[in-house]
Image 1: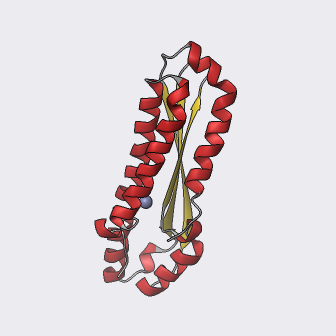
Image 2 (image 1 turned 135 degrees about the horizontal axis):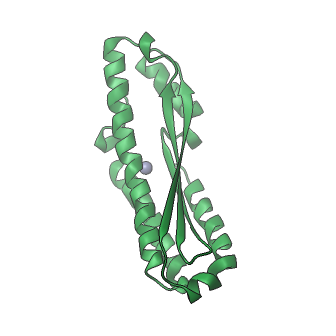
Image 3 (image 1 turned 90 degrees about the horizontal axis):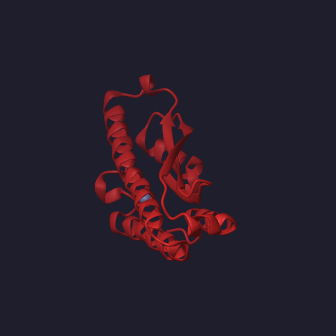
Amino acid sequence: MFNFSPRKAWVLFALTFAGLFGWLLWQTPSGEIVETEEIIYYQVDALTISDLKAQIRTRGPQGYSGFVQWRVLPTLNGGLKLHTKITMPKHAAPDQLSSSVAFTWNRFVKALWKHERVHQYHGKRAAKEALQSAYVHHLAIFRKWSKQDDRFDKLTAHGATEGAWLP
Ligand SMILES: [Zn+2]
């Protein structure tokens, strides 16, 4: 539903960076993957599902309810660093929700986490494959897994078919 993909922008940024240090990887293809994770929450505070949906549309990352950006960078010891940034909604006052709204909201957030973790997994696969390949192949590997992210979103309607939707 959105043409601009910040995920792609991140990958391109990572690739530019990777080029600067690429020769290191070329010379030392062995190493380890160091994983770091950053979770950013945006707040919602509405008390009805329809208002929560409206808040997600305006406050969520590019209108999405959740988002994952992963990037792979070479490390100086010939390994790779995989950094994953996850943006998720958080209700500011869950105690104020009625039990039925709380139930629906919690179900939604749980399904959304499951969906975003799959994107994170794609990043892990990309890093693993890159570690086992010569640097010259990294661009193709990152593109492949970035495309896999897009395909996954198309297949699941950004998680909606997996339960990450609000009625
Ligand atoms: Zn997605």
